[in-house]
Image (cartoon, rainbow, N blue to C red; front, side, top):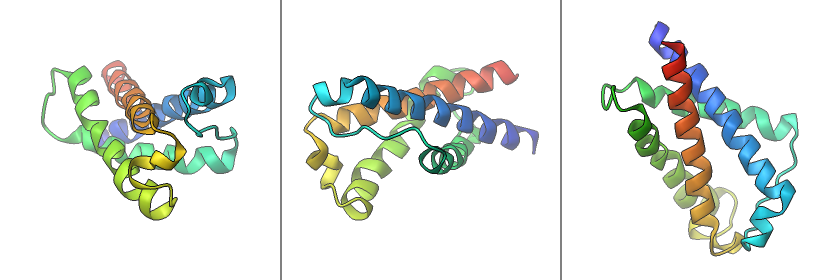
Length: 130
């Protein structure tokens, strides 16, 4: 049970790092400079669901693989929420096309980076919790 609590909480921390990165890229104009229309406002309504989902995705860190290689585990596991965002959320929920290409051609690259931030921040949090 302790391990599940740690990985969930770490996933929430990772989601906070991810969300702040997404917001910062949008607020500073980095996303726009790259031709990507992702610039959310930083509000509780936007942040709260992201933290919960980050914690749920964090449960994947309980899987017994790459235990001594948390950096690689974070990188590998970040591909799962990336795939869901690009191939389920964007096309079917947000109606922004496959891989969110209606938001800009570099959208997949930014989503990959943002979720990598989640994976690495989650892995580092787990390492610090031990």
